[in-house]
Image 1 (cartoon, rainbow, N blue to C red):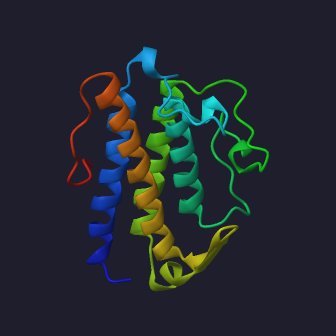
Image 2: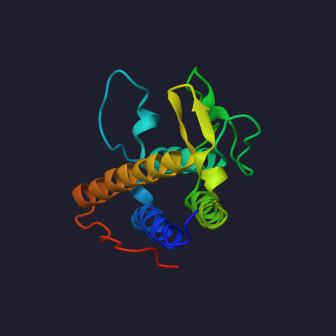
Image 3: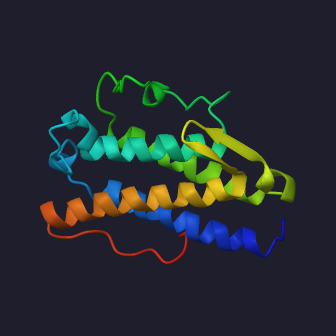
Amino acid sequence: MNIFWKPIIWQQFGAAIDMLDNALRGCPDELWHGRLWDNPSERPEYSEFWYVGYHTLFWLDLYLSGAVEGFAPPSPFTLDELDPAGLLPESPYTKDELHAYLDYCRQKCQATIEALTDETAQRHCRFQWGELSFLELLLYNMRHVQEHAAQLSLMLGQKVGSAPGWVAKAKR
């Protein structure tokens, strides 16, 4: 893979991760279990601040792996997020747990992008929702992280009165 693209992809993907990090860090304790939206058709926990952060990190980690087969998140996280029954963790994850997971995912993302070759970029990845190349999956993944970072930032703006600012490029 052309080495010109790797730092560009990392700078933007890393910026999306940094925006998620800023939102998680900016969440006051009393809002950690606060709901982003009310949807009577789903369990309320799915819209809580902590869960949206966890959901984002779980899928970031999984998509960086490129396949469900062989994927295992680090402890204390489980594969419950993949369960069709919609299992939730036994108890909400703490800020410290999600910050540690975010740091793990940031390092994994940077290493994954640095290790990209033409062969790995073109590798086909299959998920229940479709099939795409690993390079396209990286871009899809970046969009997913940014979407939820924006949701959390919006909630902070609405509930706290301020939200983290825009990150133009990865901090590290």
